Amino acid sequence: MMAEIISIIALVFSGIATVVALLQARRHATIERMPILVIAYDGVTKRWRISNLGKGPALNIVVAQQGEGGKHDWYNPVAIPAIEGSGNFVLEWLKEQGSFSLGASYSDFLEEGDDQSRHFTYTSDDRCRVYLPGQHPDYAMPAFVPSQVQRHWWASLSWQRPGR
Image (cartoon, rainbow, N blue to C red):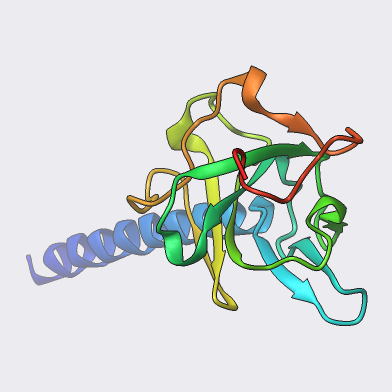
């Protein structure tokens, strides 16, 4: 009888260990493919740069500006090319300007198509925060209508707020 109880306890612990190992492996696989975009001012080139610190590609990236300290609506949404893991992209149209906050909405290759499955990065006052899909703050960038989004190669791009 005692041997049977010990066998059942060992089987339960073995099952728990297997479930924990599977959950950890799943979490690790997610982290391995996840893009992590950060936006920072590069003092050497005197330009804003968006870098992918993650290993997976960041796709369908839209960068937009917001008034200082998140006090205003988002403006000047610009689509930029995908950024591979450890890659970066210079936000040339912003020049040396910096009296605004910046945000980027992007997806990984498993995006399901809705705004809740997109990642969000926010940079303000030399601080950068990265938000996972479904965990966006209240001040996150809205989903822009495609006709509102400019392309990074357009010659008419401006860093100024519309109406100024």
